[in-house]
Amino acid sequence: MLRKLWFNLAYIGKPIWDTGISPPELIDFLSSHENGRALELGCGTGTNAITLAKSGWQVTAVDFAFRALRSAKIKARQENIKIDFRWENVDRLRNIFGCFDLILDIGCFHSLALEVRSKYIANIDRFLSPEGTYLLYIFFKESDEIFGPGVTEETIRILSQAFELIQRKDSTERGIRPSAWIWFQKYDKTKLISLVNE
Image (cartoon, one colour):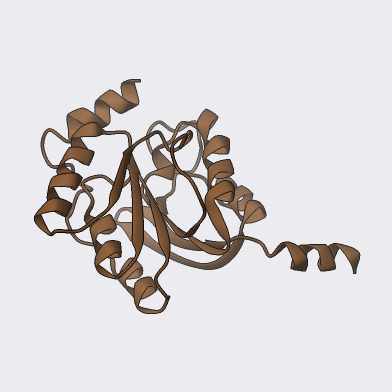
């Protein structure tokens, strides 16, 4: 509850993470992949959802901060772009249906409380299409006991057991804290079965 309140208060102004610019990693992905259905988790004011829609994707975008969603809807309407914005918690997603070719998370997962991360991961598995891509941007912290957003390398190891790690690009957030873009895909179940049987 406090987390939801904090994020809604943050969107009274312009949060530092709300740059209004889609990152080059997303642009590179879009230039090398065919259009499909995309789900953005933690869409904020809609910058990346709009970029996806302009590239021909059918977009569903989720956030639990109603102030951010209100801004996102206004921006999309001003550009005459159709996006299915939903006011949802990413660990629930009760009103999301079907599978998606891309699930995009730029800075949402690393802000989740530890106790809901397993539900979030289960939702990724539930909604990602068999050959879909899960594109994740996170920053790191050394321990889960440290206050504030961030994930540990152990968390990435757990994600890598749930999904196939295709690519990882390490960097730093504003030149200070370690961060990474990570590209996952759903494991090919037939490959897994063949590996087990070898």
